Image (tube, rainbow, N blue to C red; front, side):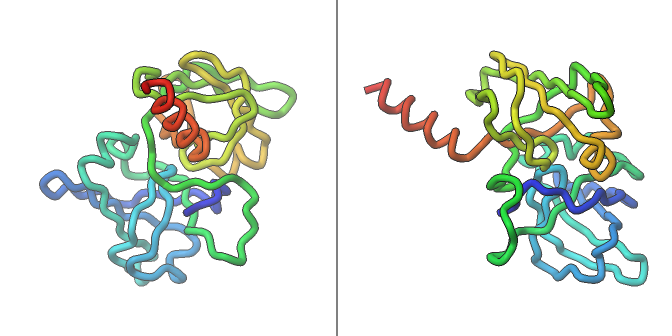
Length: 200
């Protein structure tokens, strides 16, 4: 479980493909504090640390084909920046919202607008996958806990303050960038309950 409050961006130093699996090697400031089997969110995807190379200050995680298919991890390249967050502990403040690290689908960045030092990003997603946003509801974009603005049928926007812009990989986004979405877990439960009720 994560809060969606990104600690920093990690840089990809190597990518290996083994059959349908992808092995990502990343470096960041907290490599030496990681442990094998620890969960870390990468662009909102919960991945397990499987190897730590303290000498080269990097660690390894593996993504299976299903994860590659549902997320933007398959588009990553060496030197790309990835939003990372270690899993929550019981004594940690929930400054964001409950994020599972299970990406629901990807979306495309279709708009970037700077307004008085902050930024508005607009994303378009496939509504046929059954996910929805609501005005002022929670959304996770590449693992970042955000509030939805301008919620429409298959698009929504988020407002990014300068601090978030700098500390996450939002500063790397361009028109056409593919990002990961995790919709609010409470909203997904309500939607499923209502759908089941209406089908009776």
